[in-house]
Image (cartoon, rainbow, N blue to C red; front, side, top):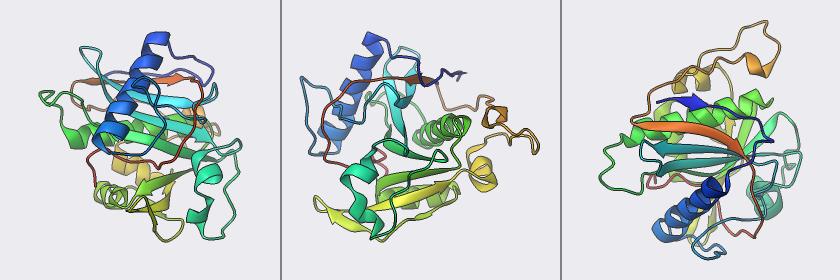
Length: 236
């Protein structure tokens, strides 16, 4: 696997933009059954903006096998705008050191991919953590199905609830913190930044195998509306 990184101002190509929106439709609408606005077989919402950061996993043939979305909490984001009740009265995070992770899925569309699901999930999350940390994040916040809590625990990631679960569309959902600290870095195989480096960019971004996929960081998007939470495809 190779990893390439681009800044938040890098726009998705038209082809990648379409492929990502179509992949999200296939995973979140068709496979997970979320009730989301759809346009011509593509899923996007109002949080897909020019400043949105994407992490995309691609197989050798170019097909997508995973995605994640990162949003700064200093601007409108899913938890703050749509699901503030999941914080049970706690203040909504608004800080350059807190980013939201959403639309996370690690799942090849082709059943014959042969990709190791656990390695893909871990590698995709590691890539998202690197991307957020490089942009100044010290914590991630997510809106997640309860199954994600078990997944993060099994991986050894430093995560904890921001509030008790609530039922949304008949499923238990909760707000979850992911701490970008030594425990999380070690669990995801991320090299530690230098103790006196001073800058998030000092984080070493060495590649870590995730099967036969590339993880590509890109930025960009376009708008719509939302009614759902973040999830890991087939993780629950």
